[in-house]
Length: 179
Image 1 (cartoon, rainbow, N blue to C red):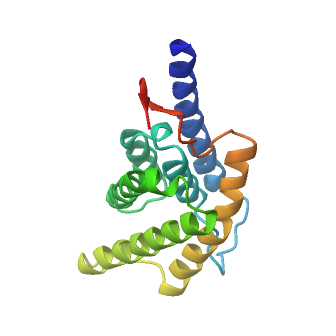
Image 2: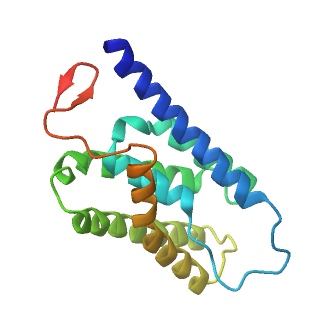
């Protein structure tokens, strides 16, 4: 049984990496050649935040850092800045995951909303301090709101299709540890 739990953990970690690479791949496809008027949701961010709240052991910090660093390089963003901020945000959410286990979805969504707002503002503030050109504020706010709006759908798909659920009080949370 220990091998089953360990292999399940690594399969879920691999599933996160595969989903993240698939999201980046589809965002890179040139499906629309016109400049966008609105910013689509950041599905990679929503996926990472949802999995960090629901099953922190499935998304280690190194995997999140690698995925977002790859995304920074491919999307020509300042390398490592968003990766660092997302790692900090997900680690903070992971530290709160045990308290959110028994909370309602509205409470979880509010926590994620607060983290996403702080992350967006910190990203824009650091870019402004470093005098790096950035997209208009309206587009950043639209993307943040769209990401918050799509978060319930990401959680639903993760829960129903991928089995990423909040652990129950008696579930194993680590290698041989009870919560």
